[in-house]
Structures are given as structure tokens and as C-alpha cells.
Length: 350
Image (cartoon, rainbow, N blue to C red; front, side, top):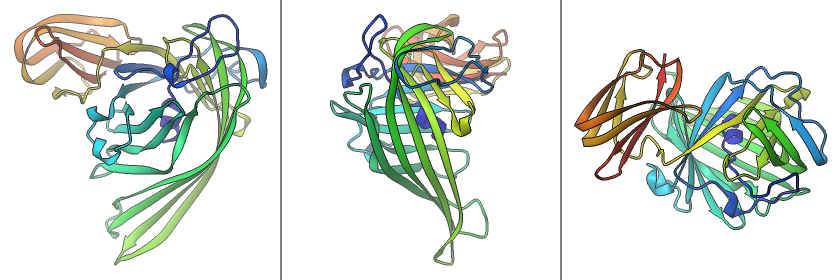
């Protein structure tokens, strides 16, 4: 969950040349954007946060791509849990092999705040809806060098217990967070050099668990943790996302994520009904649509590069051979020429 939170802090800014920058609500990436980040799980020794202050220079060109994450920006009405978060108007969706997570937010001129989470997980039998109390501030507008804020919030949920003896499992996550916008300057990542603001976030967390047995909740465990994360934000419309995020807990860089690229017009895979199988796939990928489509089938890699394209003619069932693709994560887009509808999905090539 922590990684998702860090990964999902989405931003873009507007000044060129090495200069101090400011973040406002107008700099947030719009809905309908697909954002792909890479994770370096064994960062080079040159990847360190460095000192706070003005006119700093960070060289992170040695970052490597070990794993990938894909995030979609949506309006709340495009999601299945909109009724649980009536104040949400801006949603992130993150997908993994077995899980789908929606992060419900409210975006206004004063800030971007996290209202809660909902989704499906292979760990639980039912969907999970979690409200953050009080709302967590992701960005406080205008965000400027020297800003500071402290927060306390929690969320909890109850689900079917994975232990057969017990009826239910309750999890409560409590957090104290301190954020300092402590530096500005320029940062270099594999895709280029950008003007940035840097924030330092210190999180003190407690995760507690209870089980329900014969009508009584019994406490079973608590885990406490402290994490320190540094985030660098760019002033470019593209990339439109946190450029770099480094987990520096314990005075050691544990991992780093960085932006690879963004795609516009590639909609969330749940927006229109489309089923693909098998997934993961090694050879032939089969796609079921709810209505016949005449248009194009396109496949993009995690860099947003087109890796395959073919024509679809009045078909609701489509087959495509992906055996020639390198192993990795891909985005499938089927566009209907008549209606301009897009049917999209993510798949893994083994």
C-alpha cells in the first residue's frame, strides 16, 4: 500500500531553465492519461537524495528498469465504486497481475486530497472499500519551496478471515506524516533533465489486526514502521507525473521509481467491457468485445511505443499473435472507426 501511495502522487509544472517552481491545481495531469513508471530495485550508489536547499543538482541517469507500474487517471464516474465516494472527482487506478486498486481523490484549488481506496484483490473474497479519516492531503496548493505540514489519519476495513477458525479479519492502518518541500533545482533521469521541486515525507505507521470469533473481536498483532521517501516533481506538462521517488528508510536507498512516459487517449481497461485470455500469454491472445468493431488493434509497450498494429473488421471476437513480443507488460487498444470508442486492456507477455 505504501508503494502505491508514493507511486500515485501525480504532478506537472510549467517553467523552463533552472528556477524555483510552484505547483497549483492547474498543473495536475488530466483524466484519460496512462502513466508508466519503472522501478530500480537495486539502485546504484550514485542514487542518493543529497542535501536540502536551493539550486541543487541531482544526477540519476544510472537508474535501471527492473519492474514496471502502470497507473491510469480517471473521472470518478468511470469507476465501479463511485457511489462510495460521492465527493471524489479524480481517481487513480493501478493494476497488477491479480489486483485492481482505485484511489479516490478530490481535486480543487486548495489541494489534492485522498478520500479512500477501493478495489479487488486476490487476497480477499469480496471487493474492499476503505475510507481515509480524515482525508489525507497529497498536495497542498500552492506547493512551494519551504512548505511544511503534519498530518494524522487512519483507515480500516473488515473482510472474511483467511483463517478458517475465525469469522472475520479487521485491519486498521494509522499514520502520522510529516512533509517538507526542502529543495529545488534540476534532476537528470534516463529520459532527460528537468527543473524540480523536492519533497521529503516521513511516515510513522501502525498496522493492527483483530479477528472475530464467537461475536468477540480479539487483537492479534501490531506492526509499526518508519519510512522516509523523497519525491522530485517536474515543471513539464509531459511528463505530468512524479519524476523520481526514492525510499531512503534506514539511511539506505531501498528502491527508486522513475517516470518512463505517458500516453493520452488510452483509457482504463475497465471503461468498456473487454475480456482477454490467456493472461499472461505466450502465443495467441484472444479478445472478447461486447459488440462488433471495425477499426484498428494496437499494442504499446511500457515506454508508450507502438509494438504492433493490425486491422479489425466487424468482429466481436479477435485473435492476435504476440509470440514475437519480448517478455513484459503491454497495453492493448482496439479503436472502432465508426464510433471512436476505445476498448483497452493490459496483458503480460511471458
